[in-house]
Image (cartoon, rainbow, N blue to C red; front, top):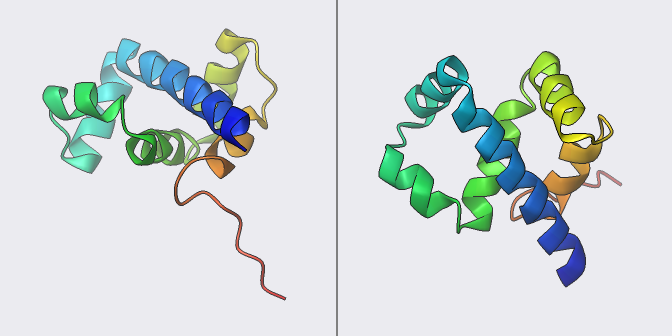
Length: 94
């Protein structure tokens, strides 16, 4: 499990870097979350914050496809990474 979480964190960090590099999208993220630049820097060390980054990006299929395409990852990589981070476990309704 620890290796999976590390992999999920690595993908989330790459996604955060991608998000920050897109000025308009970064501004939307920061406005939606209320995060400051300092919060983002500190959040890069926090698996729960990284999960929130993935949640935000996964709100839009075009963002997912853009990031995954640029990162050389399959489209489902963000969802899989999200499941390894706090709060990302799938709910089982059985």
